[in-house]
Image (cartoon, rainbow, N blue to C red; front, side, top):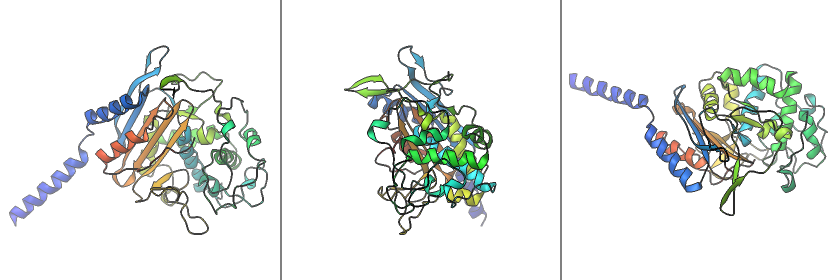
Length: 368
């Protein structure tokens, strides 16, 4: 009996020691360096969080090739579509506050968006099941500046819906521009002011700002792309028409702080967090995003088929980004790059496989 107690104590000690083992920084360095070399990525920024604290944060490479400026953990990168996850969290705080009904017609909060042949709800906007279209090819590199959220509606609001809301899935950054209008109408504040007060401050995110084409943004990375095998400057783009869906700048540390705050139940009510991180069902019972067999879409977040990982990626001019969180292990990783097509999801998956025994298993990047 005494021997049994000793063996049990040793087992418990070994489990606790394993749980508290710090991340192998050399292994993370190796993963990032190998990926950068293979893809010729100018700069990568990465942060890992475990049990409520950042356990690794580092920046590699060059954020401005013309001036030879090196990346730091404080360098700001474009989020691309990762902005959608932040917008979803902000929107759901309004639900928790009793200021927003996810299933009410959006015109209750966003009068500028014209009624369509079928009513649209905020839940459908957040889950890409509204039927609002995505970009057309000639719209991706727009440089026109829009002063107000609803001004960007001019690009798409006059088009018919692709399908009755709730009956299909079509990834739509434009839908998130409408979410921004809903958020402003329900809160009575500008999109960024509300996001800052109710998400960024709550999560301790001190480096997340609007990606303004006009303002000077300190520590912002330059963006690049590969053209005919050569590194070139990224194309021009003013993101003022899509700030809620792809118009923020941030750091990897800020993103893992967000994931950690969510996993620690610090921002949303438990039932609201569960709804955000649960695949949305279409009216026929299918899960939103089922054209990708390995992942489904909740409210602003992707969820792996096995339900272990919540994640999102981003891709637009001058950036490629990815983040993923494993709530059961209170573990997460965010990777930002300043190169289009850099596929940082590959780094994320290797980190997940190495330190969490999980993966997003995603064969491609999500849209801009």
